[in-house]
Length: 430
Ligand SMILES: Cc1cc2nc3c(=O)[nH]c(=O)nc-3n(C[C@H](O)[C@H](O)[C@H](O)COP(=O)(O)OP(=O)(O)OC[C@H]3O[C@@H](n4cnc5c(N)ncnc54)[C@H](O)[C@@H]3O)c2cc1C
Image 1 (cartoon, protein in one colour):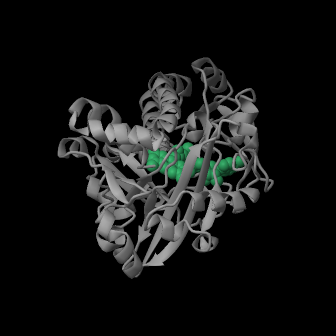
Image 2 (tube, rainbow, N blue to C red; image 1 turned 180 degrees about the vertical axis):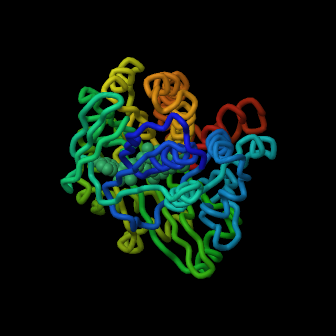
Image 3 (cartoon, rainbow, N blue to C red; image 1 turned 90 degrees about the vertical axis):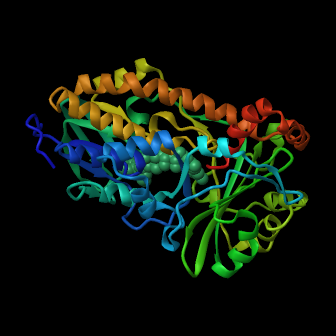
């Protein structure tokens, strides 16, 4: 680490140790800019699900870390790293009613769409390990209050501790406490969508027997149905076991109020419950194997199921500049949460961290105002466009089967294939 000669006496205070917070912390540290990360949860997190990184996302991170090769990231974070896998996904889409392939990308498409699959917790660890000095991450610090102005900020935590810093980086996710205090008028928009997520473990021998014949070395088995999606994904694989997850998603039925699965305002505890209506709906889908074996009334009882509310955060540049005046800059989901379909949120979280740290290092830590303006000049349009795109993609992906069949028919037509397949296949990477 080279000590920045303009180093401020007060550190940058980063709220949240997710992808955006840790990327910012790692790169500030590598530029010699003091910072502290505060994280509400404890150091031991669950083993976590996997996400898809796009070339434009991971390349930016690798380059900021000194042009590391992709294999370094894959060795550290791919879901199948322990069996020397490479985080590969085949981008094939399966009809989960018949168990047949619906779309297979041609070689050019597959080569164009460079996607790397990583376990989210392993990625957090890998980013932290890329810092040239150990990151100062203080767990068990849930933010209560933030106040001050750029250059002199104070943060207070529920555990009673208080810290001063030069600037606050809001990396505290979709339900950001910082945002709710600094910009209380920004309320996340709830997309009328149903999204259940389940995690389960199975022996490697079962995985090799039930999944391998379909997905080969791919870390995703992407299934679509008549107006709904059911992808399976590998979160982590060892020689003995495979930790997997599934998602079940669809738009809210047109009689929205009466849709028994549409419950956007559940508490975290309620969101873990398995509603009987979900079990009935899954049974009515008549899924082919292997979907039917796991999304089954009995099998699902052993899964860790969670109901995700699908939320978008839209902000104006004006609002971001106002927050900057109050000493706060946003990274990640806190200012651009987006539906997971299309798998962009994590990529933008990484790129935010890269761009913010670079702007602070370039402007010099004593000119934080300039750094923030420079950061938003790039990041605001990039990320807000992505929120809109991801929202539209949700609807594009949940089409009646007749529509998919039509596309399949047109598949020989290269143009139709290029328009429809990539965006669809992309979404399964989330
Ligand atoms: C099922 C699923 C699949 C996904 N798939 C993909 C994908 O394929 N590709 C992709 O790019 N993205 C994907 N995403 C989105 C991606 O995971 C997120 O966009 C990304 O992790 C956001 O990172 P973040 O650092 O902004 O926020 P978070 O990861 O939410 O981190 C915020 C951190 O702040 C902490 N925190 C919150 N409040 C406080 C407080 N008051 N005080 C202190 N700490 C606090 C939290 O504990 C958390 O650690 C997926 C998301 C989900 C849920």
